Image (cartoon, rainbow, N blue to C red):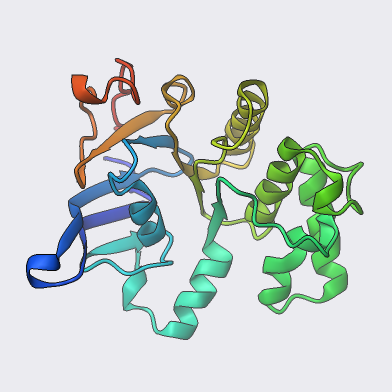
Length: 248
């Protein structure tokens, strides 16, 4: 029997405008991720990668299509339950860390828990544990401006995992970092994927990192080219890497 996907997106389309001004960004995307899987999503700028991530994370609604997470049809939820789902079930990491400069690292990490109505004491305790998990136990009380770029991104990762989400969505998490630091951040994500059995989808332009994932998807002109080699026209983004077969 096949393993049941944790995330299952069906027929996702997204368009903006109307009539002659209508732009189709996503054109019937189907995508499944299995529990504990780490996958990468590649594509040229403007191919719809970030739009797809936003929809999978329920930050935006598709024009048509459905998204299931853990068997729940996400967009059938009312506004309150959808916000709770996003807060507790999905972790987000962005290219730019989006940390609040006036708060310490532990306070930044605790924010999703505070939003979820956890007590400040418990939220800070969990935030400090998450920071220790990403190697920043010695930077708990430092503010973002006192941290390096790589350390700031580690804080952002800790913030994304502190709620113990089922799904981690990372949109170009290494795109603003030098090569060495990018490799370190990716290694951290892979380690968290393994130790926490955390299902992860990472958007990246870096084919060298992407090919270390369990599977690679390629988004081209709004269409997902999963299980296919990238086209020659896009070889500068995704060099001829071997796509792993899907899990049974």
